Image 1 (cartoon, rainbow over the protein chains, first blue to last red):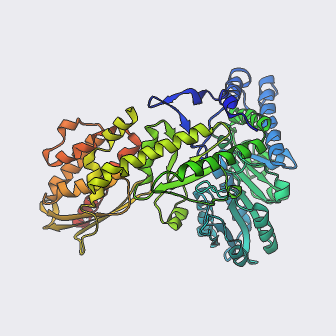
Image 2 (image 1 turned 60 degrees about the horizontal axis):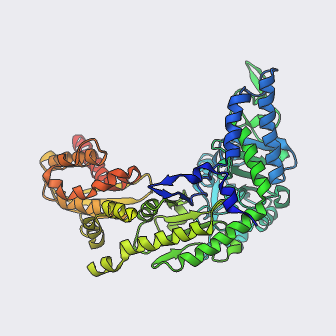
Length: 415
Length: 157
C-alpha cells in the first residue's frame, strides 16, 4: 500500500494555497506535479554539470553525456525495452508520434494504404495521421467506441485488411479513462500484418509496461505526466524499424559524416536526435523514474483504483451529474470525466477553482470523441500517487455546492 | 464563505437569468447577416444571424439571434449583446463592440461603458478570470469578424 500522506511531503507545490484554500490538484492527466528530488536534479544539473553533450572531451561534457545516457538506460528499463538505443528522446509524446508519421510513414506508406485509429484518440494521435493521409493519399479508418466507453474489438477485426499498414491507438483514454486491451489489439494488427504504435501518454505513468510483452512496434509517452520535467518525451521503437526509417530532423548530432553533397545518418538513437537536446530535463527525468520505481507502479495503480471507486461513490450522490466512461474500475485508469445536466463544463471548472480544486474542463483535445458523446466538453478529475480520499471528498463537497448554486431551490423557484 | 461570495460576484443573478431564459437564442431566417465563431480555448461554437435594413455603415440592425452551446457567461453575454444592439446602426454597433471588448480586456474602466451597454456591466466579475474573458467576448468577436468581412465584400460589389 502506498502512503500518500508521506509522499505528499516530497511535493512542495502541494503546500500552497489557491484562492485562500489548500490546493487540491486533480489535473494529473494534463501534467503532474514534481517531487523535490526532480526539482533538485534539475537545479543540480545547472549548478554542477551543465555542458553540451557528445561534443567535448572535457569533464563537464562527459558528465552531462553520462547523465542523459543514464536517463535513457533507466527509461529503457522502465518500459522493458531491450536496448537503450531503442529509446529516443523527443520533446513530448506528440513529437514522438509526429516522428513516426514523418520518418516511417512518409517512407513506407503509399496511396491506397490504410491506417487504423480509434474514436478515443487525443488529437496528437489523429492530426499527424490526417496530415500524412492528405500528403500521401492514405486512408484513415476508426475503431468505434461502444456505449460504455470501451472499443469495439469485433469491428476492429472487420476494419483490418491487408491494406492496413498501421494500427495506432491510445493505451488509456485521457478523456474517459478507458484502459484498452493492448495485447488483444496488437494481436489483431499482427493478424493483418500491420505495424502497431501505442500512445502510452496516459498509461506509462500509471501502470506497468513491458514493450516486449506487448510486442508493439512503437510506444510514445511524455515525461511531464510522470513526475518529470516538461520538454522531454520518449519514443520507443523496434530496432530494425528505427534502422530502416528515414531520419527526422536534420542537423548536428544526427549525422555520422557530412560532405557538401550529402550526409550519412548517425547510429541509433542519435539519428533521431538532431541538434542540442534538452539535456537538463533529460537528466532530471532520471530522478522521476527513480522516484516512481521506488514507489512501484503496482502500488500507484492500486491507489488510483481506490480513488476512482471513492470518486464514483462521492459523485453518485451529486444531483444532475453524469459520469462518462467504463464503470468497471478494472477497465479504467485514474480519470473521471463528468458533466452537470444543463451546465457547461467551464462554469463547473471556475466554481471548483474558487474552492482551490484544479480539474481540466473542455474537450481534452478529443473533439471527435466529444462529438460522439454529444457534448461540447466535460469536466475531468484525474488522480496520481499523491492524491487522497479526503481530496475526493472535497471535490464532492464543491460539486454539491456548485449544484446548489446553479440549480438549488432558489434557482429552481425562479424558473 | 469566501468561495460563495466570489461565485456570486462572477455569476450575478442577472447573468443566470439571461442564461436560463434562452432570450435571443435561435436563428433569424432568412438572415441578412450570418457569422460563425469559435472560442479557441474550449472549441465552443456560435452562429450569429441578424436582419439588417439598408447598406453599409448606415444600415440598421433588426433582429439578432445566437445559436450554439456555451457556458453561462458566453450565453448571457450573447443574449445581452443581441438586446443592446438591436435597432442600432451598423456604425454604432461597431463602436459598441470595440467599447465592450476594451472594457472586458480592462483597457478601459467599467464606468466608460456607453449607456447602451448598461446591462453588460454585470460581466464585470469576469475580468478577474482571464481564462474566461474569451467566453464573454465570443459573440462580440463573432459579430466584429462578420461586420469586417461584410465590409470587405461590400467593397468588391
